[in-house]
Length: 208
Image (cartoon, rainbow, N blue to C red; front, side, top):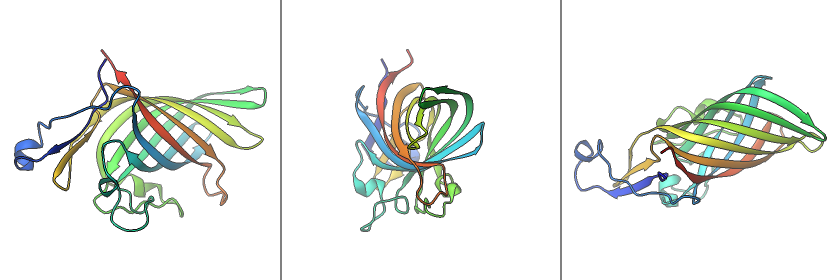
């Protein structure tokens, strides 16, 4: 099977010489790729947006994922994500509600982080440089009595772009690679969005 790839290659020449043909390593299958923190807003019964930041990337140090300073949150995160989705089906099953959606995801890199989950400002998570895109399908299992929810995404990477971080060239994945992304969420105490969540992405291989 193909591997989900991430590389941090030492720059031997200029970006012009090396940027178009970067060398890569890999995330082994079943390895954690990254972790996220974010929130969800459902503008209508048939649409949903999810956005936030990557709080950990396997293979990168905190100095490559967060701007310098004591706080490591959305306001200092270099990598953010933004998902757009449409709802395909909702099923009530006993005390559970099951929601099926399909959509797209983009991971961005920001030279000057400015994510805003508090106001909130969703566009602050998608105005950077797109480093990876994917298509996905997910199943939401919601417990209406507590409003807690559990979600499993199945992603297929559709594009990836190399970026410079300090003296390193970094690339997240390659087209055709696949990963599972699982998260747990709950209500927003401020009631500004439909839920807050955190989760983990795990490599599962790719298309043959």
